[in-house]
Length: 278
Picture 1 (cartoon, rainbow, N blue to C red):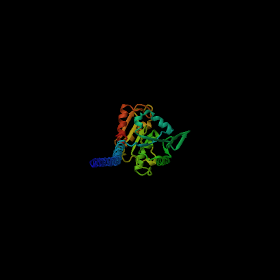
Picture 2: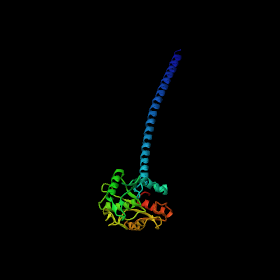
Picture 3: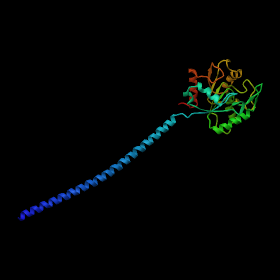
Picture 4: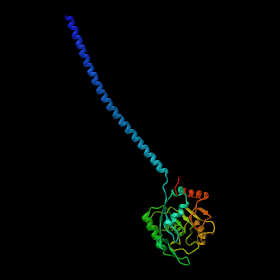
């Protein structure tokens, strides 16, 4: 009888110990899971944060690389011809393909002196082609460059081209454009040298006394058909005033011409010179 009681007690104790052990095990698993989950979440958050930072750092490098590889658009102040305006000049450039125009930023302005309704000029000439109010016109251009700039270069067509061609030389001598940055390049279309075949304005008399060493693109007509003698004869003289000029000669008239295959090759050479394309 006593032996049975002892066995029962031992069995009961074993059962209690087993239940207690199971409770401890279960509790430890819960604690372990909590610790593991907490560690896992912490590790995952840390890993994600680390990878995100790495990605952003690499992304910034990529953006910086793309920024370095994408050339800055050169900005040109565009000067129309005599008896014209900014809108008419802009319409002329519909002849040029978009893949050329998108490499540059053209800003068109009206001249200061009215000729007729909504038509302007940069200076006035008398019957002998002597200029009047030239200085005022140049001062006006400088004011617009201050207002709308900065600009990298100037573009001119016809009378505007005569002005644009002289601006770098006059600026180099400190005669004008002292409030703005240096003109880095020019595009001259159907224009020539002030004083080349006709009297020069006093302000521009020494504009070409030294070679003008900036990238320049000169576009003019190959024959006298559709072009004035003033432009046709003075355009080569302006080209000679620049160092290593690029020249497009076309068979059209007094206009912004379409660019044929040869013209496009020269245009892209110019775009490379002014860092508009890589």
